[in-house]
Amino acid sequence: MSGKIKVVSLMNELLFGGDENRLLSMSRAIDKTRFDHRVMTIKRPDAEFDARFGTMRGHYAAAGIEVDDLGEGYPNAHVRPGDPVLVLNRATMLARTMNHFSRYVRRHRIDVIDAHLGPGNLVGVATGKMTRTPVAVTTYHAEPWEPRWLWRRVHASVLRNATVVITDSEACADTLRSFMDRPSAAISVITNGLDPPSSSRSRAEMRRSLGLPDGPAVRVIGQVATLLPTKGQMVLLDAAKIILNETSDVAFLIVGFPRDPAYRDALVRRAEELGIQERVRIVCYPGPIGDVWKAIDIHTHPTLLDSLPQAIMEAMSLGLPSVVTPIAGIPTMIEDDHTGLIVRPSDPGDLARALLRLLSDAPSAQRLGAAASQRFRERYTTEIMTRSLEDLFARMAGA
Image (cartoon, rainbow, N blue to C red; front, side, top):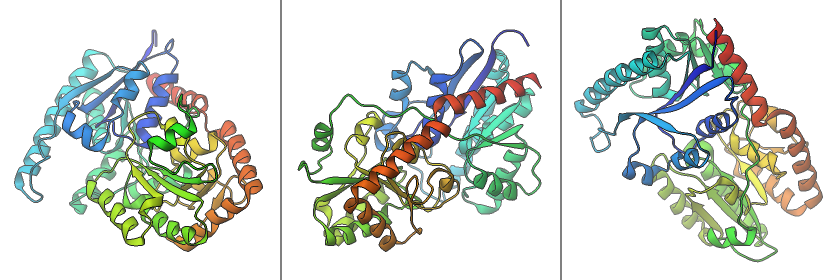
């Protein structure tokens, strides 16, 4: 093959999330002397949707990464659940999207389709079959959607018909093999990678901006994750109540955009029910994530469903101690009492005890943070991830 390898990364939309950050990191670091890399979304920018759920389009633009789109909107945004129009709109949009994307792939002579998450996976694999282009599918879960009988058939078939399935941990790879039942696509485990988040804002400035207590003795326990029930924010609130019964020199910061605004409202109500609303901030922050980390002393991620969370990597890169749950690939990142602390899922008492330990034992917190930083440099940098993806794309294009 002569010339650059042409790779197009396809994603439904650019919400705030781990895979969106993974793609951003790769797009910044990919070797532009070897690869002609493009980023495309199925959805076009939409002011109402982006304001409600957040978008990373500005972050891509700030990094000099052009994002094209297939022009689709949100025709089902105001359709009632169960309305037959939902199915009709989805089928029409899928057919139109596949047609537009296949024309794009042929016109630009794309060598590799790099398809990300649900709709991106589906459109990418279908287009790959139509255009005889190899497809790498990136996914982290076999998360169901309704109706289940259709999901079980369609999602498994999409994964089986990819050229390669990319995921970020061996635990998730095992889950995907079982889900596919008759796996024909190769599964490639490529861990996430990132650059340590940075910020031009001071710690005091960010604490004031986020509405946190400003006293020098106050330490902030923070979770940075999409607001979803599976991320364990409710568990953190229950643990916060226990901690605040023991000490007052602590505040809690929960940062993320909701997939369902009702869940954010439920978190706010729970904090009020517990009587801890004055010591808890639940915010959506659209700016650089490094700004948020400036305000945090101890990181926690009591997730119930995950793969290899980027938030944990960000905390590791900054030398912050983390308290996490042993879900999927997380134990490969956080080794209990070495690079962090591991607690039982859905157990506020266990989470509170671990966080209180770090609050009361500064040398242990510093030791864990330093070990986490060392492990980050050895395993989870942007450079390591991007070189692995480049090698994979080159092999696919050559084959």
